[in-house]
Length: 169
Image 1: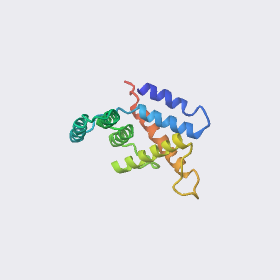
Image 2: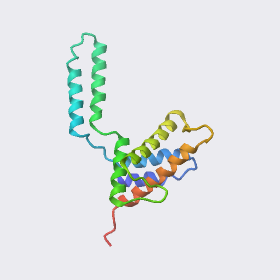
Image 3: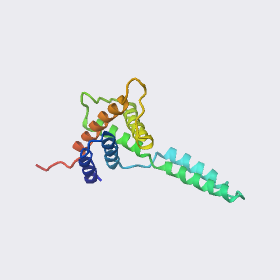
Image 4: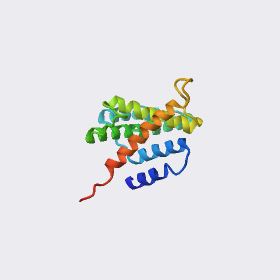
């Protein structure tokens, strides 16, 4: 995955379309993550919900049975963390492990990492689904995008620097 992440990163700047660069950098981040199972307590809750739904499968209507099966599948997907949560966990782990703090990207708590990654994913979602990142305030056009872009660039660059295999020399 790391090699592919480097390849994706190298293509991010081949074009002069900032929104394409942004989505490419998010893809690069995602390639660096490994999604993990959620904690045991959450797994138990999910299993209990699925078990409750299984008990409702004796529903006579075929459509309702299909809806229950689809819902059980969706709930089952919650057993693995989301890619956004995996990215946030990776950011928090690496920034703590390597002390990757630079003057323009100082995130000192898990909440700040989550807020930053959430903002990056909000912007990404807006770009992918509506073609533009909507600003929080109308009088500051594109500010949200550029702020998220700047943080995303630094996060990806730092990850790639510190995740690459170290030379034995």
